[in-house]
Image (cartoon, rainbow, N blue to C red; front, side, top):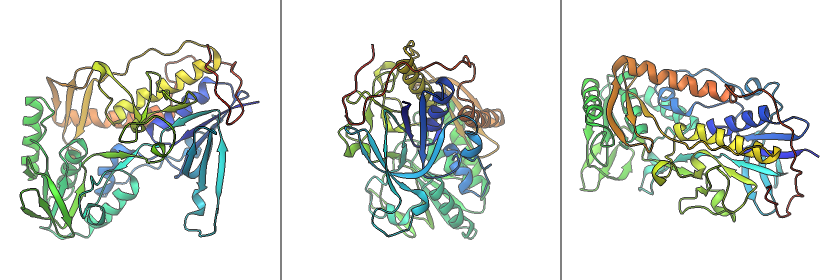
Length: 407
């Protein structure tokens, strides 16, 4: 009887976890199913490039997982019962059908990897959901791409949010469309999380690109042609790009899993749910602690090593091997400032900026290598590890029965 592993979500973390598990465990012992609504991999870190008209290389999962034994199920996750150990999915090809239960299927699992990630967060600001554009995923980036292409010279684009996503989006748009008036509304000081050298370079690049910066500005309302700030000021905006953070998929919060107030699944150092031992959460969906007992931030930099940790922990528990003990830490923050400039801010293990930075064209090349390396890591999740697959020694419990913790 095969041990059934279901991975929900095929972003960076889910795809890495699925591929690493497939190359860690014998195919005769496990059945690995990767559930995703789209047939190809989305490079989420490049959505600002997609939005400005750049074309990204297609990366179909059929090629990425060819010969690995991973079964790709194109479906949307609609429900999760962690006590019965089942996932409910709707066939992605059935989108738009109105018949009751059309394309709905229940999938039982023995081990679940929850990697549904996150989406854009309107923060409940009036008008944001109706009028703003987002780049948290491909549909939003393509919608913004189409809108930007129709803008006439001199029109204003306002990017709301002064974090990494907002900074990269503003710089990319300003470089691609120098005929537009691009502005950034930041709740604090521009680049306030960076070192003094990092802030200075960011401000210099924004100045060169002609980006207007509204610092210490909280947007409290969005309309079709403007945004309103907390002090009553209105800023013209033919297009508003919303980049104020992310919110996790809501399904976990509707289960009996222990979650945070924001819906993230609380996990231990091996990315295992503290309430349900047959569930692992990885990436943005997980509340995992890093160095200094600080939560890991939502990022590819956190998600990739967490995915390795998840797969290795599952494999170890199933085969009687040694559990991984590699604390996740940070080394730098990589920021693209258009295609010709960049900023690499070096950080402490717990993600605090240090004095050292890398800037300019060399930093842009560095960031591009990081992006390419992230995709390569998805397709090569066991690079540098022994190729030998281990045999499963733990037998799966019947669906709905209590899981027994292996020794």
